[in-house]
Amino acid sequence: MDLLSVKKFILSKILGRKYIRTGHCRACGKCCRQIYVKHFKHVLQDEKEFEKLQYLHRFYTYLKVIGKDEIGLIFECQNLDPETHKCKIHSRRPGICRRYPQEELFSMGGELSDDCGYKMEPIISFDEVMKKIDKKSAKG
Ligand code: SF4
Ligand code: SF4
Image (tube, rainbow, N blue to C red; front, side):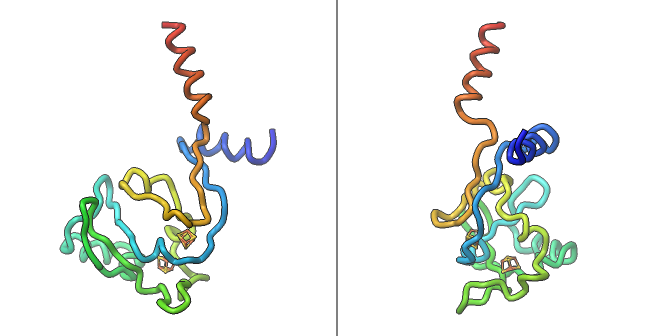
């Protein structure tokens, strides 16, 4: 088994993940300018609730509300340098930024920007899913 297969095995069988992250960050800063916040099972809609969250994790203290849409409140991170589009605290950025993007993004209705250097690829290909469905129906 090669390293990629081991990684896929751990992600899907042990961590229950459906996607694997490939590629690399191009440091465009887009994901730091349009952020949704998910708390437990819902995307934040209410500024009062957001104020309370700021006591829970330093990441939330970096954010400011810049709008709202059908998904929820939209935040921008104040650590993003508007000139260079780089993170001003890159070496000590929170874990949530280091792990971005994760598949939770999709469950919030979010998506990667078109020119993001990362891709989220399904661990099990469409063909494999179809084979599994065929097998189940044959048994069935
Ligand atoms: S949108 Fe993608 S490429 Fe741009 S900063 Fe975020 S992770 Fe990096
Ligand atoms: S802390 Fe840095 S990497 Fe994280 S959202 Fe803010 S600007 Fe982006």
